[in-house]
Amino acid sequence: MKIHHLRNATMVIEAKDQFILVDPMLGEKGTAGPPFTLFRFKPKRNPILDLPNSAMEIVNKTTHCIITHLHPDHLDKKAEEFLKTNNIPITCSIKDEQTLKKRGLNVVETVDYWKESEFLGGTIEGIPARHGYGFVAKPMGNVMGFYIQLPNEKTIYLSADTVYTENVDKVLKQYKPDINVVACGTAQLDIFKPLLMTMDDIITFTKNAPGIVIANHLEAVNHCPTTRVQLATELKKQGLIEKTRIPNDGETIEIE
Image 1 (cartoon, one colour):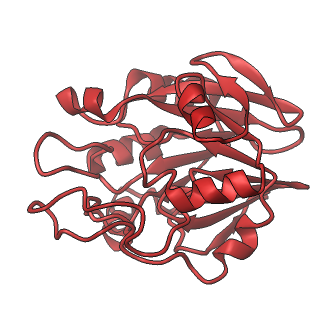
Image 2: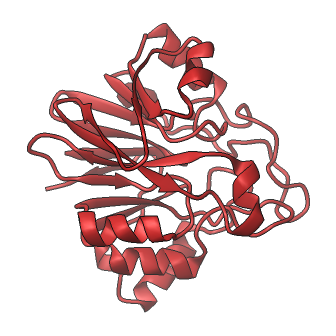
């Protein structure tokens, strides 16, 4: 299995002849939407950098797409055009089905929380995700993480845009995923608490993850202050860097 990290939360999971595109934000720099903050962090239109040159070569191999939620840094207009033009089959939360179908996308499968669905010869299960600490999680809307078991492959937990919760803890400790993907940008709006895990919770996630941890959602949108260097520094202090991958945009991780 290979994990192709492209930008932000956008990745392609390559498993034999399947190329599973996750949370595609495919537009050029500045085309996905306005800044998420005006004064807490420098206001820049998102994404704040282009896709790597090799990205579309991988994306064009897509056989299936998974969408965790509908924020523009996880599904932008360019991605919608790509998915529609190529009639890519999509798996999403049962709560996002109608919206995506109204946009003309080819939703072939919906997933509910804590329920297994058939997925590419294996299974996929919806995991609750909470997009923020405290009050802000409600206006941020529903998000779904996914636990994926493909035939003769490592198990994958896409935790999605979430803070550390009892549900996240349950998956790490009871399901024991081989690959654990976590959003590490510590996103924050001008007001309210962070939308993603604080550094302390990223450390907790990494400690409790039984398999390797892949850090994403870094250095691509203007409201995510945590950098790869900061994250690596903290993980080294905690003795956790060996089990963690912090890929650069366009980097491929090979999973043995």
